[in-house]
Image 1 (spheres, rainbow, N blue to C red):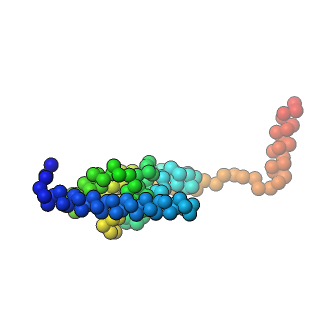
Image 2: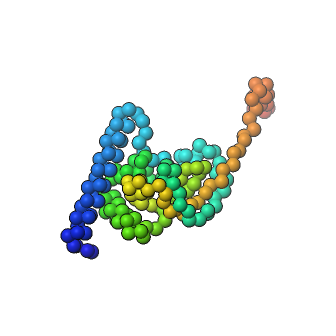
Image 3: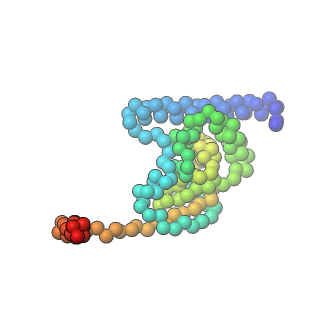
Length: 175
């Protein structure tokens, strides 16, 4: 580990930036609790249920995607707020290391799942947080895409149809 004074000063400055972001996230979370609004990340399974059927999954490959289109997480929802600001103090070292790797230009692609025009992070939450904090517009990501198909359930909307099915059910029960 490099313990030069310049290295330590840089890490302290990045820790300061981290805690500024964290304090803003905690303050916004408190305000959201008071007003009843939402300040947590969308979670992939809950959002996918809105689409009702996820037909197929395919690997698109490595692409540059807009950071602003990343709206949620694939599994976790407690480490970052809805703007990918850190909430947990234990994320400090990983966040600083991700920041340093971004500035050195040797950050690996994140892993995201695309549903419609929205992306959900599976791996790379800290890198997305850093990218948002430094104002990056695009980030390199390995993208898995869910092709959506709408299923139309056959529902009888006529009252006689419902009445007939109830009558048939009761008639079977009486025999």
